[in-house]
Image (cartoon, rainbow, N blue to C red; front, side, top):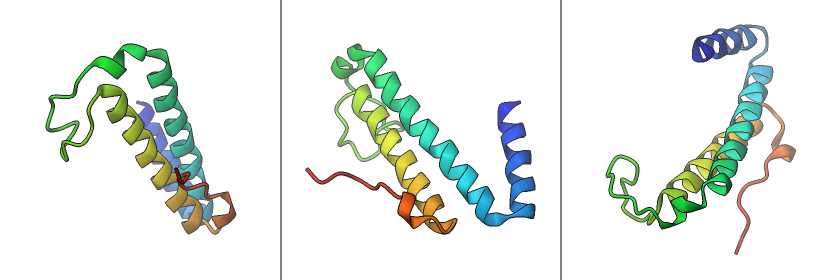
Length: 99
């Protein structure tokens, strides 16, 4: 039900203003990134649980379920940044921190 509502709202926004629809998507992606981070924080046991799923870890370079969740969060950040750029708000792009 939530997905259907999101799709209808996104389609309506895109009809009215594509830039606003992209900005709305960026806000949604930002929320998702933070939720993945909170999940990892709330489940420290994931740091010790190895990933044996080729679906969750297709490249094989993620060792634990915490790593998988963090990677999904980073993917959400990339989607957010792309939406901010496409919506004409590149100044809101955070990107990745250099280590």
